[in-house]
Image 1 (spheres, each protein chain N blue to C red):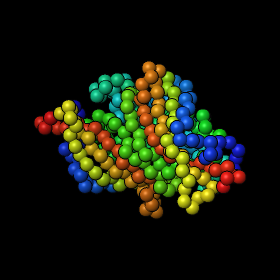
Image 2: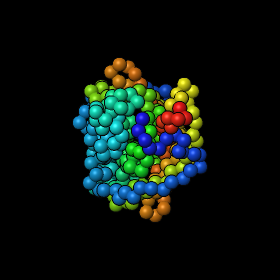
Image 3: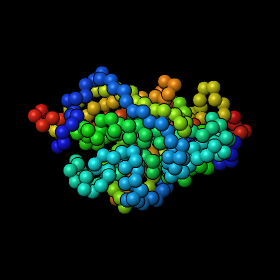
Image 4: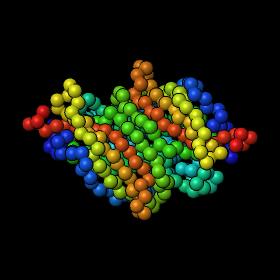
Amino acid sequence: MPAGLAFEDFRPGDVAEYGDLVVDRADMLDFAREFDPQPMHVSEEAARGSMLGELIASGWYTAALLMRMNCDEFLLDARSLGSPGVDSLEWRAPVRAGDRLTVRREVLSARRVPGRPEAGLVKFRFDVVNQDGAVVMRQVSQKLIGRRAEAA
Amino acid sequence: MPAGLAFEDFRPGDVAEYGDLVVDRADMLDFAREFDPQPMHVSEEAARGSMLGELIASGWYTAALLMRMNCDEFLLDARSLGSPGVDSLEWRAPVRAGDRLTVRREVLSARRVPGRPEAGLVKFRFDVVNQDGAVVMRQVSQKLIGRRAEAA
């Protein structure tokens, strides 16, 4: 078990802000071409006929960028054992190339898991916020995180 | 408005099965290094000390692969206007390099949206199934899909 953040370090109500990532146009397009080649995601020209009329990121790209910011901020330094899933994911506003994204994280709950003395489930709400303060994506998800050795 | 599948073509209870995608090891690792570099996702060696003790795909990679299979099967041929979000996403079993994935899609509901005469919201359940018949990921999500011109 690595050192680092443990289940006990996440308390309901805790808030953290982090991340500072500028959406790279080429990377955004590469992702879209590989995973989500809908017209509004693959080129300005194709996007012109879409609902918003402009090029926007795939929502799954924004989700992947959030995962990266979470890894860099705390997951790689935590006793992270994986995730059973996502409770909800809302795409609230478009993400465009050049947008600057940050994350606001709140711990919603932290609970023990029957039959798993070594870990607990932490439920987070992650808001991805752009340079104008708009929440572009909100995700509620759970992570299984190891307890401290002395507690387990 | 392109031709193709419209809101009216999705009826609650409709089931479809499609996709046939073998998880490529190099692509899976590329994704993990870019977006989710946790030990269990980036190399066999690093994964050895993880909960499952073996290399597995990032859950976000599986979600991206589902999006790709959905695009290829129907979204690129539908009047897809985007998605407000995901109701739930469960990672139920590990995905490994070499796994062969298919999709089972069911339409859960289809409803009109107040103030949007031109479109409707279709709620789908997508099960991603591996070569052994195990559901590795289940996603419930909604898509905004244009109505037929004569209906709108």
